[in-house]
Image (tube, rainbow, N blue to C red):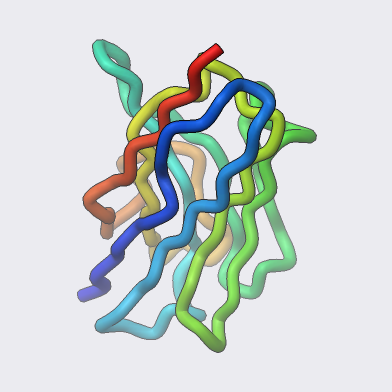
Length: 124
């Protein structure tokens, strides 16, 4: 059983940056593929980024490529999402998730464990 806790969300002006963190406990963090998802009001949860267990493979949805960067520190059991050049359409609750798929996944059902989420609000 993996327990995930996100932090780092907040209110930021368009063009600004935020760094999200997700600390894992209760499992072998370096055995899980990890992902970030987001859900805006009235919308389905959508994929943002994923990283393989080793950190060598990274995947992004098109709308965040070149602006967001996913990374992990297996020594600290922590997943990160560096978000730059934020836009109002990035406003959502951001969730980290863990999967036994070593390369992560692009769809929510592929993940077994979820954090409680952290709110990101971008204003223009």
